[in-house]
Structures are given as structure tokens and as C-alpha cells.
Length: 280
Image 1 (cartoon, rainbow, N blue to C red):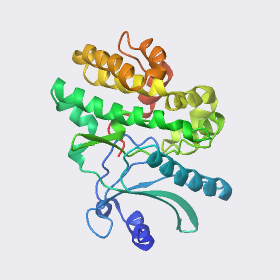
Image 2: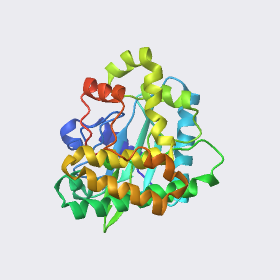
Image 3: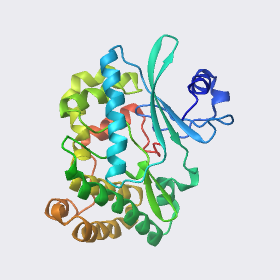
């Protein structure tokens, strides 16, 4: 169990004492790993607080339920804790997660590997996607999954998923759409987003669709390595037939050519300066 006093100290520390951020993506926060101390083997993710105590309490319940559901569905996760940490009179959501080796992050490995190596990584990530969705029927609640390339590490040939925020369980589509704004680290998104609430809400739809999560993985690979796009499309068509036949028809309809991001999400990413790097 995390020493909460040590956690408060490292969060309050200046950036030099904290250690450098280990991801530039940071839609919800900028994760960091302390350079030393009792939390040096952990990644810490600090999120925006809310003024609504009930909403915070529900967030914790949902996050705990989501981690439990992912594990029950067979998704490999590093040890993950969620805390509502009292800091200077405010309750701040904080995730403390077992740190994975930086060289194991899937996105940079996809950029530098051979085509054969990257196809093996796609198979590993696809295995996690198929395992989750083939086991998701047991949950009598709205549940989603966001298995993008940047949310995986590859360890001993297996894919490990590590993105548990926002917790994609229990919340309605409209509630999750609001959460995408409430917890955005980007002030610009919180200002502009409410005027585009329908568009923002639509960002999540892929995460709640089995075929779309697989198509999204293939699309990310094609954008990372356009010269190998045809190989990834072939892999996706073969994989969905082998491992996700329930969703084969829907997925195949989108795997005739490299899948593209929705235009509104591409625009948001450009405005916010999001580079698509690993969201550790």
C-alpha cells in the first residue's frame, strides 16, 4: 500500500525533485516517475480536483470497479491504486501505478522495429483486445476499453495495458462526454469544449465498440508506419476472423484502407498540441 505522506511530499515537490515527466501527451495529466525515494518504482498521475464531493467519491468507486473488471476480463495490468488525496484542503484524484520499463513502451517499439517485429506486437495487443471483449458480456453495466498503441507496453512478447483513466465503467455516454472536459488538463479544451460538447462526447464512442477498438489499433499502426500499412490491414482482417468473429463484418467494412481519425479529433489534437506519445 502506498505511503500517502510520501505521495503528498513528492506531489508538492518542485519539478526537479519529482523527476522529469515521462509522457508529453498529457490530455488528462502529465505522468511522472520520482527519481528517488519510496515511490521511485511508481508512475504518479495527478488529476484535476472537483468541487463536488459526491462526484469524487463516485469516481473512486468507478475506478476501483474498472480495475477489477479489467483484471477479471483477463487484461494484464501493472499494480494500480487510486487515491483521493487530501492536499492543502482539497481532495485530488491520484493514480499510483507500478512503473513499466520505458524501453518496453509499444509506440516507440513500433517506430523502430522491423515489420515482422511490429506485426508480433500487433498480435500481442490484439490478443488483449480480443480477450477483453470476448469476456465483457459478464459485466451488467456500460463498460469500454481504450487499447491504443500508446496505452500498451510489450514485455516478454506480451502486451500489458496501463491506461485506467477515465474509468470506462458505469458512466453514461453523456456523463463520460462531460468528464472528457472536466478532467482535461488543457485549459483551452475546458473553455472551447462546452461549445462543441456533441463532438467531444463522440470521442469516446470507439472505446465502447469491440470492432472499433481493433480498427483503431490498426489505424494507429498505419499512421505510424504508412509504408507498412497494407501489412497491418492484412493482419487486422486475418485477426478479426480468427479472434473476434462476432464483430468480423463490422470490422472488415473499415479495413479496406487505412482507417483515419475523425476530423474533429484531429483538429482537437492540433489545437491542444497533442503528439500521440505514450500515455504512461
